[in-house]
Length: 348
Image (cartoon, rainbow, N blue to C red; front, side, top):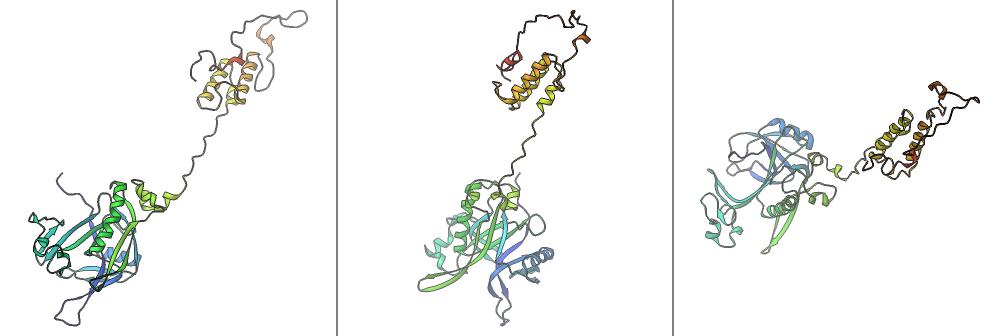
């Protein structure tokens, strides 16, 4: 219950790399990349990225580390990724040294010592203008899944740009406000080169843009989406396929197979419950069912229209060969069914 649950980190997404310095007395030269750089301890992951995004797999040892990794400087200027559930963005001001992270601050309190912001106390309000060797750097980390690469896990993008931090946080806050972090979100990521002029100096810097990759903005703001939609965002804009209407039972055939008018009435009840006849019996199907009931009452076979031979039932014929009339009180003419399909009435 006290362990932090998170997906395994498969590798890193970078916006720059280093190349050897011709001067052996100096460290590697940093290079800002126009395409994404993917690195990992696993050669298989990097090889899969190279096959998908282009580039060549190379062994590489990160600066100030001793364990070799693998990386590929891809040809991809844009990545399609998925934000996992929860809040995938972590931001803080950090200072690193050979011994690891020596400061981690939220802008007001330094988290490791629980003291007020050390940079602000030492250098004042303009502390962020000083060299990165003297003060903390804004550090943004965002975990994304690359659905077209192998294995279940996240790739971490890290940026130490103040402007990138602002752009990433603003977009993700809007999305999280809509989804409440309860669903995945497909995103597009690209490196955007920007320029800023301040104090007479022009500064160029890259910003990684992260925006929802959905057909329409309303899809990103309308709440959580399904995993299937995160994998295939275009499905959100497809019209729903209407279910084929169920075939209506052949009530007339059922009624013609009935032996009594009461059985025909029960067929009408079934049709009424299914919504296939009017409750007042005014529709064509109700009228046909009533006619079948009358035929059954009159001894007419509704399937053939043939009148049954009453002599076979033992009725005596008079001298003219006619059956002696018998007066029967008709308590419920078949034409009087609805209200609703007597007897019994009530709801169908």
